[in-house]
Amino acid sequence: WIFLPNNSFDLQFFLGQIYRLLGDFANAKKLVVLSLEYFKNIPDSPEQVGILNELSWIELLLQDFAASRLHADQARQLLIADSIEHGMSERVLGQIAFAQNLWQEAEFHFRTAITIFERFDDQRKIAWNLQNLGNALKCQSKFEEAIECYNKAANSLMNLHDEHHWARVQLNLGTTYCDYQQPEIGFQHYQQAYRIFQKLSDKLEMARTNTGLGLAFFSLKRYDEAKLSFRLSVEQFEMLNQKNWSLNAADGLAMSYLATHDYEKALDVLDD
Picture (cartoon, rainbow, N blue to C red):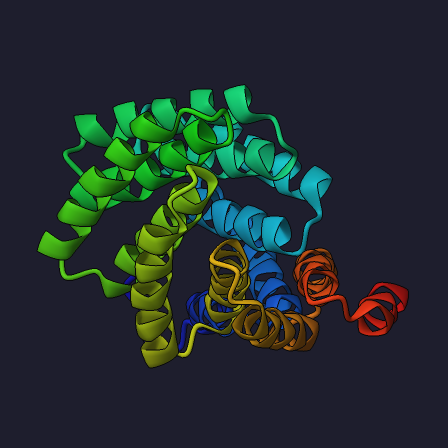
C-alpha cells in the first residue's frame, strides 16, 4: 500500500492490519470496515478487493466463518481478471475450509492459489500457500507430502528474509513431526518458531507454539514441562479472547495432570 497525504482511510486500513498482527482482532475489524465503507462509495475502486480479503481474514481469526466466506466471495466477484488478489481470495477460502475441517476443499483452494501466484512469479505468496497446502495434507495424514511442502516453503522464505512466515513453517513442521510420531524433531522446530515469534511479539503465534511445545513435551513424557507450556498457552489465548484454542490447550493441561495422577487438578482444569 502507498499512503497518500490526508488519506485517513488508507491509514485506517494500515492500522487495522497492525491491530491484527498484535492480536486485537475486534479493533482490527472496526478499522478495516471503516476503510471499506469509504472505498465502496468510489466507483471501480481497486482497493475494495484487498480490503475485503483483509476483512475476511480478520473474521476468520474471529472464527466468524459465515462472514469470512461472504467477504472472500465478494472479493472474487469484484475481480475482472486473474490477479494476485484472486489468489489471496482463494487463500482465505482455503483457510475457512481448513478451520471447518474440510481438508480436501482446503487443499483445492490452496493449490488454486499457488497456481495463480506461480503465474505472477510471486515467490513469497507461493511459499505462504505451500505451507497452507502442507497443513491440509498433514490433516489427511499425508505426512511426507506435507513435510516436502513445508521444506520448500521454508527454503524460499529464508531466501526472502521473511522471518515471520519462516517461523510459521517451523511451527507447522513441529506439529507434523509430532503427529508423525517423531516428537524429538518436532520439539526442535517448535523451539525455533517460538524464538522468532517472541522476537516479533506475535502473541497469537506464541500461544499456538506453546500448545505445540506442550504436546511435544507430553509425547516425550516430560509432563511437568508440558504443564508449564499448556498453562502459559491457556493464559495467552484467554488474553486474546481465543476461546476455542484456549479450550484445546486446557485439554492438554488436563491430560498432563492425568498422566502424573494428579486427578483433582485435572478436574479443576476441566471444570473451568
